[in-house]
Length: 433
Image (cartoon, rainbow, N blue to C red):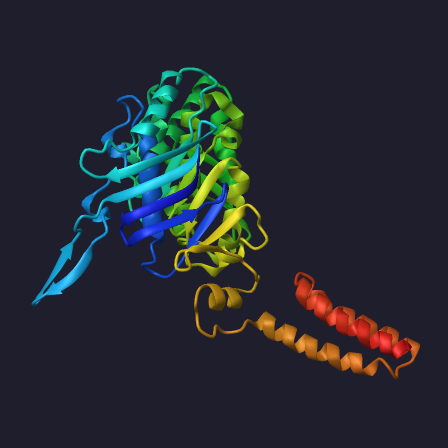
């Protein structure tokens, strides 16, 4: 399941808006109040229709429904009173994408007498009829909002799970707030089951592998009997440490919680895939402020790690971080969408300063020490070049070595390298004449 295009009418801050998505990763950028969260909420509403065609195990609380605040309104002062009116606005969300490997269009219209989602729900009903068959794969749906760390877990409430429907993987999947109890219950049940039956559970190992592959420095993750929660063994400040989940930093808990939630939902929805469940499950994941609580070093890695860990998932995320934007440089599978320009934009520079100034509108960002070092190196380079024409062969050789040394620290910047080498070739060519 993927969404290629989304059209909004009278939704939140949008009177009329259309945007396209990458098959793999789309990053939404824009100033505060530009509509990043609104787009993610609209996507959640669009995919929620898919859940309506399943049996009664899908609860109303698992669905995203249009509420009065979703309809665009206008304010006006009449006399000394400010009024808020929606007038005759009719909210519509139109999506174009792929469901069950077939192109499909569907609408959500908040208007009297309109049966919203009926087209997409009809497709889901056909999938539900074949849910007990091994070749029926269910797509992952998940939404992670900015409140994903607020809810704390009471370990005493973590109970074992009895056999249940695959559809349990959709429980609370579109609720942007954190809900880790179900994840913890699944992990605990799988871990104890593997120990009791003395067997290797492929889906559990696949989830472990996904978590470890996503977290820099992570070595091992498991459900611990003594702590009655997830423990992770990881390298922190050069030392291997074992830390219970609740004592991890917000950055670690944020990333581990989100990745583990994605992985366990995949294992619940498609357990028949066993060890391949993470690599073979398709779906859509929405992430608001993907950089939340992450150190800049993690921010530069998180997109690549997500795409490598979950190769068949479509991600749509928002961010204010120039490091996240920078990480998309020269990636054909990623799309950067500027909500204020209402268009995709290229990441045409690897410089944080250029991104902050040209793509995020920050006026006169401070130049980095690296930029200043490059500037100084270029000045030294020109000074050495001026010495080459009158120099002897030994001196020329020494000066050429010096030029190579000046360029070496900036070997990852082809434009800087090419510009100075062109100057060098011109000077050396004139000297030989």
